[in-house]
Length: 323
Figure 1 (tube, rainbow, N blue to C red):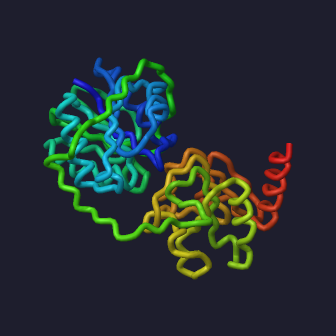
Figure 2: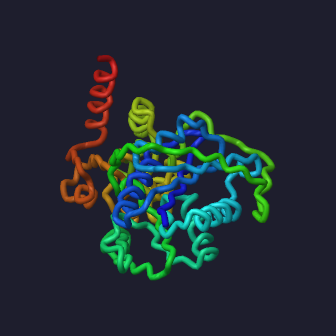
């Protein structure tokens, strides 16, 4: 028996999200009295793979095959399912991001396994196996009973703190021709966005709302984002007005993000917006209305005019960078 995580990489590197999964998986393995195994797909250096050992992973299975260079949820789920059966995995954990949401349902069907999606904490119990998740745009919690021999969990980003638990780790290079796995993805062309940080990948996001009053006032948002190596975002009314492109729209009807730091500037905090950003580790709200709902979700709040507050924050950041 084992616990298995899918250790996603970005251009051959692991991010904090992957280490969160490892920390979470290590705790579940401890609760079940078993070991933690990771599956890595793609070209990742051994030194990077061994970083997972800091967080309790005892073995990582590295599958580097040119046919898996581009993400294909059907092929990835097939490979993970095969490895899960080989390693006797009873709990499989993935991130609740685009990749995890695409792979997990396929795994569930292949393994006839119950799926708990968007889980935000450790199981309330392991026998029976009960997990918790947010529902109704984060305004309530539900408890899910996963009543199958194999359980699948997708973990919300920033819902579990990193916990180092150094162990000796073994790296096993998977030698396979992917026999039986159908890879249907055909890559015609790849174009990478240049100049801007992808919103879904950003560790820091600076977002503006109608409180910015005009698209002509957006420069401080952009300047702060550049100083912090952050992505820019906006609320739905801003994108609907055409002030900012629709790909920057965050919220229930836009992009769901979970950065480590989210600046909400001139955003009131409607339920639909908070549903898309509530998994951020820290939210800093700037609004001239002290009763704005955003302050209830924020860890830090500044009551004031964004046009006056932002320049002061920018200057403070510049001073810190020059020290």
